Amino acid sequence: MEKTEKTRYSDSELQEFKELILEKLKSSREELQSLTSSLSNPNSNGTEDTSGAYKTLEDGSATLEKEQINQLAARQKKFIDNLEAALVRIENKTYGICRETGKLIQKERLRAVPHATLSMEAKLKQG
Image 1 (cartoon, one colour):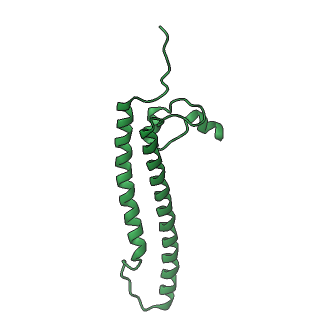
Image 2 (spheres, helix red, strand yellow; image 1 turned 30 degrees about the vertical axis):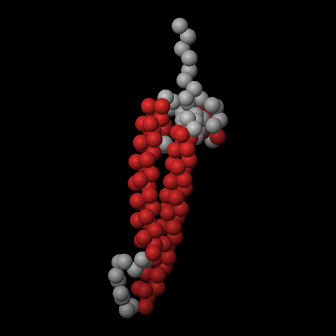
Image 3 (tube, one colour; image 1 turned 90 degrees about the vertical axis):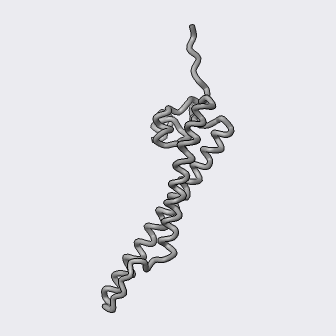
């Protein structure tokens, strides 16, 4: 008896991934919300110090912190976009198929990186 290689995940498997992605989306959106709210009120630490030198130092670190938060927020937004794209692939039943090899991406990889579009094989080839 010939074993046919699966070309796509079953609807129940896709549903399992969908739930995982929706869960990640929820927490990612909450994290993004928290990052953006910390950007909109930067002086929440309440250190009203009169010392000029300390103030300058604080401004510098506040700017650096703001840049880091901006980068984190941008990364979070990209992650959310990738997860939303993965949901579309689930609807199209193309989820979990490597865009390079056309083979199924391993479940373990998808559980770790639910928005993956490359199998490890293809990713390693990219170098």
